[in-house]
Length: 72
Image (cartoon, rainbow, N blue to C red; front, side, top):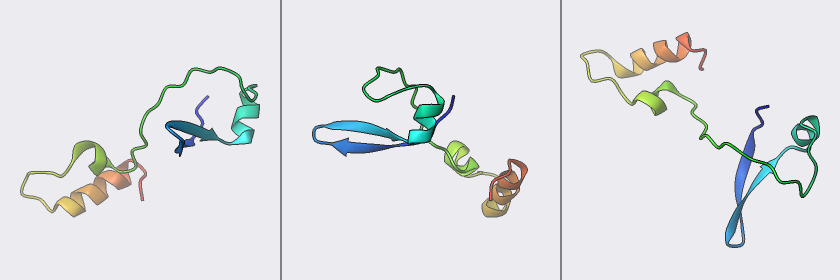
């Protein structure tokens, strides 16, 4: 199951806030120990690959790549 959450600061620690629906759908409950794999959210091809270094219009090329991958 993939659930989106938000990392928040709680005192000297961090906490991960998940929606109640996602937690219930996974059959989990409060105070239950879980194992979490964390990956940062990447929203644009530019965030992964940077900008192009060829003699092309970078903005136009990135728009084309975003369009191919369904980004807006």
